[in-house]
Image (cartoon, rainbow, N blue to C red; front, side, top):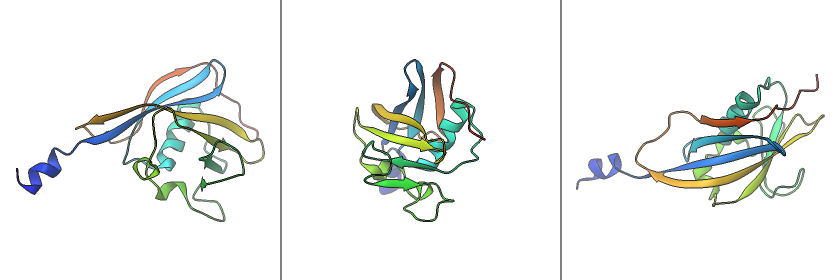
Length: 140
């Protein structure tokens, strides 16, 4: 098989992530390894009906304000969520990390990798598969 055909049929990684706000309130989102944390942020905003009017961060060790973090592009310092793809993070099955939205109100959600799938189809945008319960209200 020539290189062009190999590239065309290259398998892609797809992640199914569960975003848990509190017991009984969660969303399940399908993401490609090519999607960024910024795109995950946008999918979470959409799933929970939030306004995307506050800063956010992903804390990879699950604790707010500690360890490796990726920040919203409007933050003073990086690294920034729009510059890192899920595939670059080395995510593993059952891995958890923290999404913190609105640094004042500190809306905290746990992101867990539920499935890691190999596919030959690349999702062009994140897909919200399922949402349960009433999401948080924003602090204006």
